[in-house]
Length: 275
Ligand SMILES: Cc1cc2nc3c(=O)[nH]c(=O)nc-3n(C[C@H](O)[C@H](O)[C@H](O)COP(=O)(O)OP(=O)(O)OC[C@H]3O[C@@H](n4cnc5c(N)ncnc54)[C@H](O)[C@@H]3O)c2cc1C
Image 1: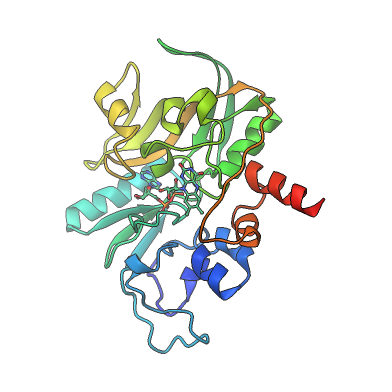
Image 2 (image 1 turned 45 degrees about the vertical axis):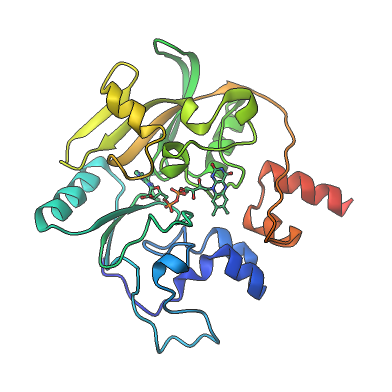
């Protein structure tokens, strides 16, 4: 699809929402539900700012020009091959949470991975270093969906504090901080295998026993550095009760509770305040 300028889609930016007291609820959904919009104003070129709803000066700025909504491995391969053959700048986007702007890029073709939402519970997975239940996640699964699936199957999964963050991209590839990290390790420690489309268009699985260098790189090497992740399998732990909290210096309590609705931290915090 060709991206349209003048949409004011970056209204998903949480800080801007907070400052302007615009409906913060949208902060967690606005950018995530758009093929190219991201939460960073700086890296979009600060174009099309939401000033009095005036869109007459809008340009694409740092936004990609084209986006492909991928729902299958084949589509991801086609998009990667298309960009490589035409020499196009290529970016990968799931939710647009990356404040460093790595999921946008001027003139790029954007691969939008937000919609493969499959979640499969695997009762017993055996690897050289792990034996137990696991969850196989599509590339578009966000933390809230991971937590809901884990809850449904009576296990605990390691995910972000904010439930709007995607699991398969830079959360896992960048380490992945979690309320459960002190007990079970970082997000990247949970990964048992990753399915990925490489820059040459090949579709491979990386795990402890296959493409081991790639498996190492995908758990800390940064989002979209080595390919497009189409799914990944993560450990599931025994059901664990916990309470956690976050303090964000630049956000009010109201803003945090609305930006991260339903997260363990904010719901417990909200409850204690309501009481
Ligand atoms: C409000 C907020 C709360 C946060 N809370 C936490 C937290 O609790 N714990 C934590 O660790 N981090 C947290 N983060 C940081 C978050 O993990 C990173 O911003 C992360 O990059 C978001 O990943 P995403 O895929 O959702 O975002 P996107 O902006 O869509 O993508 C981020 C990066 O991942 C790449 N990427 C996305 N999908 C794929 C894919 N399928 N294959 C390959 N590359 C891909 C993109 O190209 C980009 O480089 C938070 C960020 C925000 C804004």
